[in-house]
Length: 186
Ligand code: SF4
Image 1 (tube, rainbow, N blue to C red):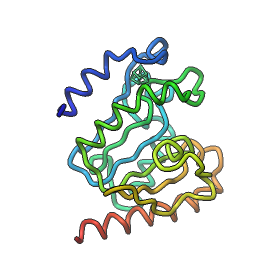
Image 2 (image 1 turned 180 degrees about the vertical axis):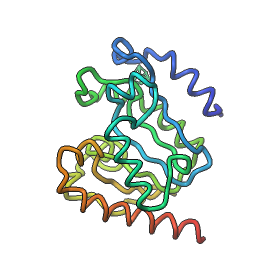
Image 3 (image 1 turned 90 degrees about the horizontal axis):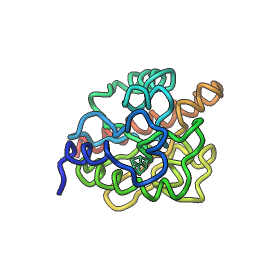
Image 4 (image 1 turned 90 degrees about the vertical axis):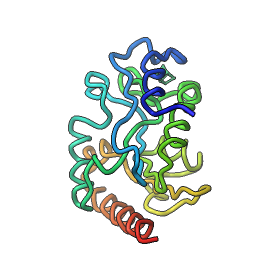
């Protein structure tokens, strides 16, 4: 089994899909590898591509604030994306790109062994939980798959465009906090 650092090395040279052509950096993911809680978005944006880090810029700042509201910091979670390279013009990743990139995420999950995975945004929820999920309707509940509890919530970039949805997101974060406390008390 790979170590996470070895996987990161392999991923940093990846050309399995055409997203490698336009990227500045591969955004592998970062955070606490001993965590129970992983956050997974859909793909890097321009700031992430430039810095090689997930969820930086305005959406990242909002995510940090939401974590702080439930007494968490980035150092307590692991955060990554479905695809590790930026889709041009921030378009959605294509099915073939997702398929090529998913083995990295599967390895990350296998190594970290989170008990809760929070999917951020529609694409992440569809890929990780169920292709039929409608994120605005089906968010904020627990979907159990194997030993992992999946909680879909809205993407912070969506919340920046739709501030009125922040109240829904707050409900989801309360559920994340409650579920984490329950797991930690076992
Ligand atoms: S998106 Fe994933 S599969 Fe495609 S080049 Fe980047 S790391 Fe490789």
